[in-house]
Image (cartoon, rainbow, N blue to C red; front, side, top):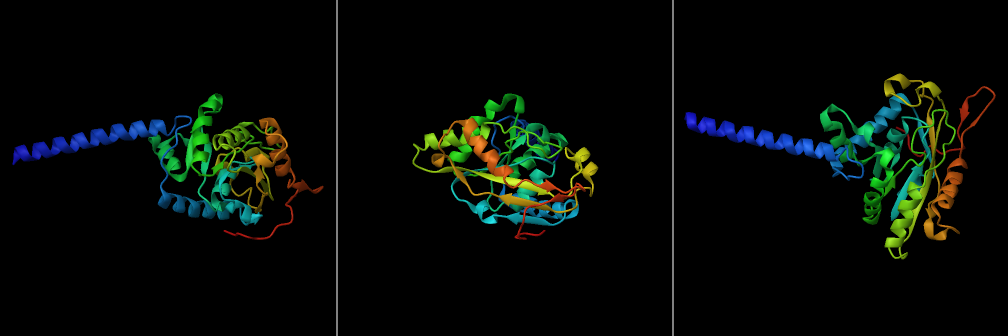
Length: 272
């Protein structure tokens, strides 16, 4: 009886040790720039519901203009402006497909690696902004596989809401994918503009607790028509991103003398 108990304890100990090792290895990979984690659809559904609840509490009413463009089929990169820590939650909540999300790896750190694994299951994959090239090849493979992607072309949050220069990454990924498809299948970038009706510059970069209810004035998201690479007069990355930037800015928020943000005309296509 004692031998049987001892053997069982050893087996359990061995199993736990092996599981911990695999957990640590996978968590490390989920924080390695360019690694594409495995997604888990049930968790993605739960995450989307939680994101909508989160927005209802912290932002309020969500209006989407051009929502049909979120359903654009094929190889698509969605490119929103980036003016708030809330942007990622907002985009996750309104998406109709299940894209992959380029995410700064530092945002995935914490809770002993669990945060990286869970965010990876939601659809995120890590990017080290100091080594941007490490993510290009994996991102091209993601797009080649038919999975859409979300990429904030500014690269970081602009607290004031003014546009930062758009980086070339989205155009490079789109162009490379188009070329590897022998230029026989379309690849597009969908511009998205986010306009919060209330803005607190001091808390735009987070954390969420600091943002509190200062942003609870609602938000309008305008989704532009897809910009197909093969239809552009120039496929140079800087030229492509100039077109994307222009399409995003087309729906910019404007201000009144009282500094209250006014969104473009919108139809309430989704409300949390």
